[in-house]
Image 1 (tube, rainbow, N blue to C red):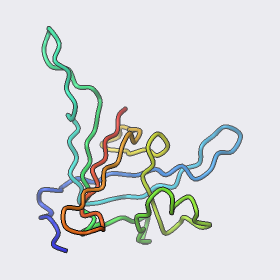
Image 2 (image 1 turned 135 degrees about the vertical axis):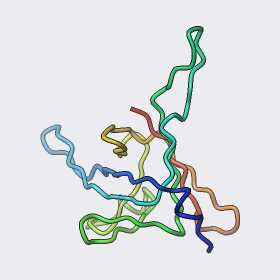
Image 3 (image 1 turned 60 degrees about the vertical axis):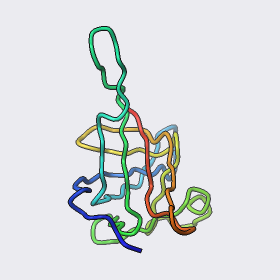
Length: 133
C-alpha cells in the first residue's frame, strides 16, 4: 500500500505498554514510534473567557510506514487481544485504552481510544489514537 508523505508526519512519540504490576507498581515496556502526526491542541472548550485546551492529544500513525523500535530492535504492532496472548512481548507493542501511555514532548497521556482506519482493505492503513493527560 502507498504510504503518506513523511513531511506531514514529523513527530516522534513514546508508547509505554504496561506489562506487569509488582506490589502495586506498574512495570512498562517503552517503544519509540517515529513519523507520526500529533495534534496536541485536539479538543478545545469554548468558555466565556475564550478557548481552553482540554488536554487531549490526537496521534495518527501510518501503518504502511510504521517505524517502531527500542534501541536497535524493531517492534511490530499487535492488536490488544493478540498482545495479551504473547508470552514474550519484547518484539511487539500495542495500544490499550485506559492501560497504556503515550509520552509526547515530556507530557504523559493515557490512551482513551484507538480507531483503525482502513478505507481500502481489511488491514488498517492508519491508527487514530486519542489520549488525555
